Image (cartoon, rainbow, N blue to C red):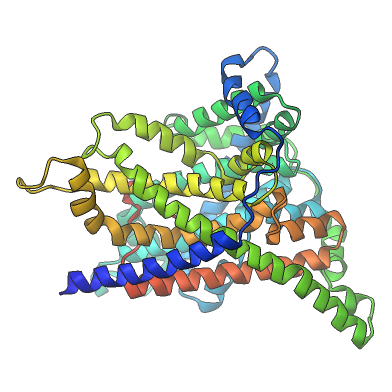
Length: 495
């Protein structure tokens, strides 16, 4: 009875989200505006056979810059993350961390570019702030899962209990998640190049805009190699030299200007009606134009992209998890390669590629989010099937095994994966507006271009609260389904 009840709940939730996804799809813009998209696509993929390494010395420097910024950012994020984890039960701290992690790294970068300029400090802070919040939350959850010690071991000193009892016991899970977060930091650092930081994304966007697809492939493959070999060059034997090298490589981080900082918080982000003492009517008109013209439109389009991407991600995961499952294929490493490539490529880069091929619409954003998030969930689900022990009378027919055994067993867990990725998809849907889709990121980028930082700040607040709302709905949905968070033992978290 309980199994049937759980299946009914999963079905009810699935139907609701499918209906929302279908309505969102109908209301979305998926037009292809390039004149010859298939010819351009062919040119892009055939350029892989015309790669030239002789004139790409700048790529080596971009790779080193990407790695060093990611390493330094993670170094500080881990320190702050552990401090936040100790005091994570504090309500004010949890709210603050929820707010800071709900704003995308590129948004943080755009803020700090206004204060510190185009330098390493802006890039570091753009990653450290949200990553510290994410690590604080996840570290606290991992430690809570492992907090099974008797009361007398806790003692009176909370910090001592944390450092000498909880952390050693949960250490393998903490390391596994930290390594995954480092992979994320590499992706985040790479895409900061799209706002001017000289990482791989900077040269990638430049080459793509000029039609140098062969150079694009060189940089993409270089990035895949970096991610695929992390375990070899960032291990327990090498991480100290890598950290030292990263600090030495970044000779200048930029200068901190207190005057710029004070101007930013006391003038730049103060809403125009208050700064310039607008009349009541003019103030109402200013807020009304912002609310109706940008906030409503931005939120609406962000939700459309998010919900279509969420359903598309679910379909992708359901179709492709057998590619990496030993229960369905004898050569799972081919599926592993495909999914590793897709999940290693940041959504922003995927969306940028599709934008050049198909033109500006919601299509590039949805395709990018589906492929990246679908690959992550497919990988996790496929590896779960490898751990499942089948009874001797289980069918050998792959189709029957898929529909009548695996899907019923795994479906609720797939939904849990989706709900944990929902907040991430929302964050990415907002930021992909910078590429031309009229989500919140589009209006934030436009406000920065016009140096309307007061509008930018208000739109960022809306983005943060929207992500927090999605996170709360996601938690309620998981509670309704009574599904647990996927464990961190796989080393690939959903956050």
